[in-house]
Length: 236
Image (cartoon, rainbow, N blue to C red; front, side):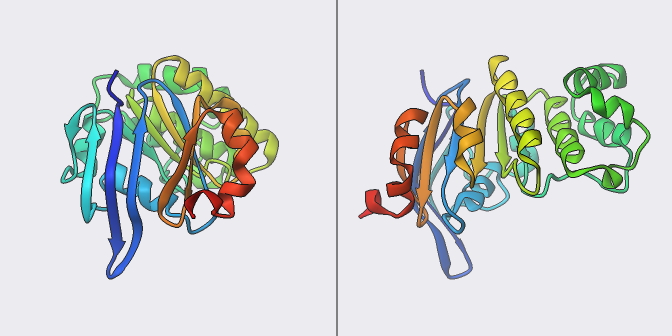
């Protein structure tokens, strides 16, 4: 089966500074792929290219077999690609309910269906229904970000640094939810600096260093070789 998301020899830059140096990545349909690597490896830049927030300087990006290099973020969202960006991407001055309703505007679901989807997966959000999102804990805000993504009924979910600023127990719970989402057929790409939690639920893992993918394999293989890969031995 063709990959649902594929990058071929993708280069991307900020001004004159090239960050991605020919990335090749094929994400299998329905899989959880952990995208690992040290700070500065280019992981977030890669996510921006996949989501249309940064245009590739060269190379090819395909979603569901279609060439999407020039597609805008809203067009990719309508095609089924949803992003939970680094920093969560919620509206802090809106309530939990308002955040959820905004996420569902592009779809056909009613407010009741949106709330059922969100609150079944995250009961704690039901308790925060009228609370301003910015006043919640970091873990609750990340739950809201994930719930906002779920109500769009995505085919591909990109998650950037799920663990940022959160306690390990909360991170473990959120990764368990990602695994459950994948069981429904959603493809998940999770960018993570800290590998253990992501590898626990991943079907495959890719390691990125110096703007390139240097390894793609099953989690057990990546876990075994992770230290050497981070040090750049595989890129030499």
